[in-house]
Length: 94
Image (cartoon, rainbow, N blue to C red; front, top):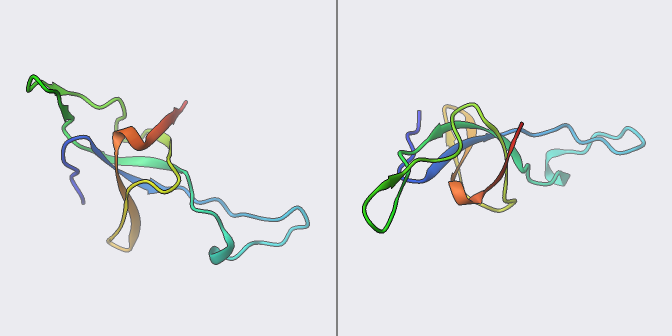
């Protein structure tokens, strides 16, 4: 498993089956990149200018929405994961 550093977060993207209004299922090449995912791991937090560590707002298990082209895609144990900064996370889904 990956352990992110600092203010970075590891996310597993949640892809939805995309179907047109007429019922045609779109292939992977025609789908848009997912912007929704589940937080798998979080770093230890950001370090402020005064040296104090600021904890992250997200935690493992949170379902989040993130910027469309943010982060770095990695493959670990045949899972597609995304490593990004907490600032690239736009919202936590309630």
